Image 1 (cartoon, rainbow, N blue to C red):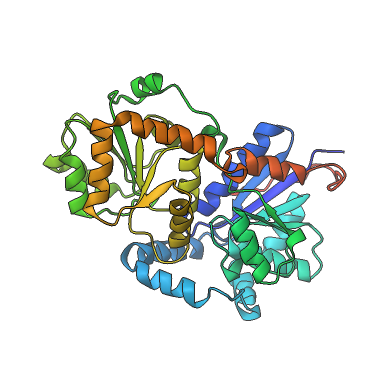
Image 2 (image 1 turned 90 degrees about the vertical axis):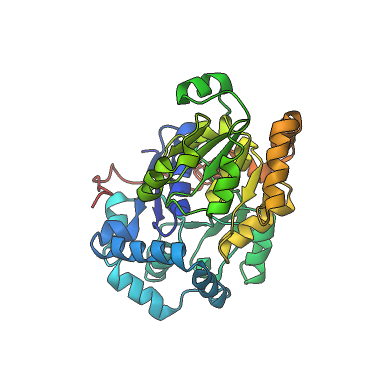
Amino acid sequence: MRYPRVLLFSEGFGTGHTQAAYALAEGIRRMNPGIHCRVIELGNFLNPTVGPLILSAYRKTVSTRPRLVGMLYRSQYKKSLNRLTRLALHRIFYAQAERVIEQLKPNLIICTHPFPNAVVSRLKRQGLSVPLYTLITDYDAHGTWVNSEVDEYLVSTPHVKKMLMHRGVPSEFIRVTGIPVHPKFWESGDRKALEAELGINSMPTVLIMGGGWGLVFNKELLSKLAARADDIQLVFCMGQNEKLVASMREDPIFQHPNIHVWGYRDDIHKLMDVSDLLITKPGGMTCTEGVAKGIPMLFYEPIPGQEEENSNFFVSKGYAEILDSASVIDKWLDLLSNHYEQVQEHRTSTAQSRSSHLAPKHCAAEVMELLTDEQLPAIGDEAPRVSDQP
């Protein structure tokens, strides 16, 4: 008899899907180290030549033509992936998906992206008996997530549950778990110690995140922020956009002792702990991590589609504002300079007032309930190890 094994399938279209899978895996391990969790970006794993090319094209489209992405999102909003699309995905990317599942012998599969979700649904229709759970990683419910073969949907909010019910999914097959955040976001660190560790100053601080792909902010906003560097510290995290990082570091307006320009970081939890305001694109994972840390957020130019829906949710709850005018950034910079205690009170009230499904540990705790011996009896011997590296 062995502990249950959880297989998490994701895709790299947007950094949040895979991030959510790893966050949930680490949360489960934190609660029970004996449970075996495995995360695989299935398309890249099974087709390491074509997968990265398609991902690169998608990333370029998001960066240069966000309105087109929004149009595609809305045009297919109420539709599940049709049979022909599922077949094409299976043949092009996922022909060996069944072999991977057979080798790893999971007790359950959790999908954090619609594509592997559709492929595993197809396999279940052909006889696969492993339970399939679909973790929707945004604050919206696009039709591509919906498949009749899904055993249970794990959703971010009661509102998303209602949206699925309107799409015909019975209430008993939907569990409000929230979106998982990595255990690094479960607790707050000591600010003074972290400031020393990171090599930054102890003063009001704004964290500006360009996302994992390093999406670009307009020069007017950047100049307005840089002009306040004498009394407000600025920490720029521009993701994997190395050209942007290099150009910012060479620009005289960013050459100030209170301005720090960095690329990709794996310690965002520490940066949120030492910051008082977050300016970001409203990706589902970043927003959820921000609320876990209680940091006030300003959302910059949400992409039509899921980012708009994420933005609408967090703004409606009072956790964020849309950065749609100079007056918004001026207001917050003035608060940081002249009424710092109000910003600190805002942070404390956010942490105290958030709903239970937004609590940092909630998703992992809910998934642990799915892993009881009664629901998932232990099976078989240890399976052969399959690498998720190309």
